[in-house]
Length: 81
Image (cartoon, rainbow, N blue to C red; front, side, top):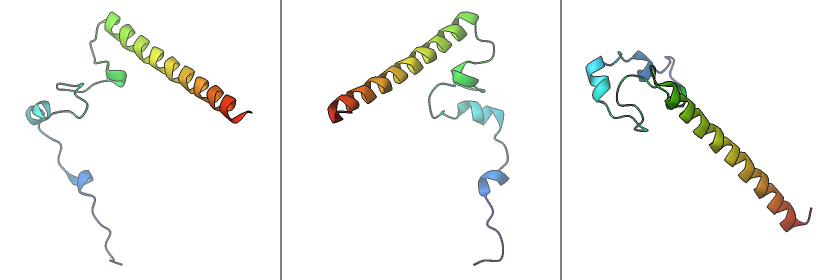
């Protein structure tokens, strides 16, 4: 085993310049530059946009819970429990 600890290069990199960071493509395509907030809500978003995004996420969450509940019930019917 080496006696020196390996250097993690990601932690020692210099921060990117702002002009380069704005041109870099984002992984999800949601941010065109700057930073996105939680749930894709950007700083300075209008109130109706924020409420729309939160309602979409809440409806999606309820849909997933309902789907999981129905799958469990279906599996219980199939297995006879």
